[in-house]
Image (cartoon, rainbow, N blue to C red; front, side, top):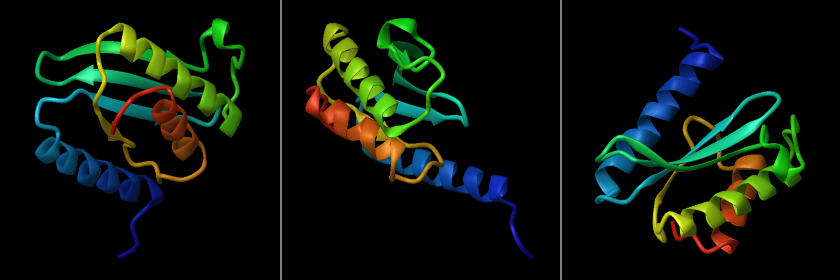
Length: 119
């Protein structure tokens, strides 16, 4: 029986999230969400259930409102790295969700690494 794209996405997201829970060891989670029009990222402390920092293409100060391309993903990655440093976070685990580590997600991760985040 063939699975739909949505079912495959949800299975992949659960598989990634469960692997992260085993390897997180108290580090915050850098969670990426990508829609057809925007890309957003949150730095989440799962132990306390709070968001430490967030960045999105919906923010006007990044200059990429409503764009979802590799350039916009790079700017969001740099912004989250800067905000994570302000929040006192140096290390985290990268949660790509059900998205493949390719293209926009990879550009976001590379920009966050260049900004000083370790994962």
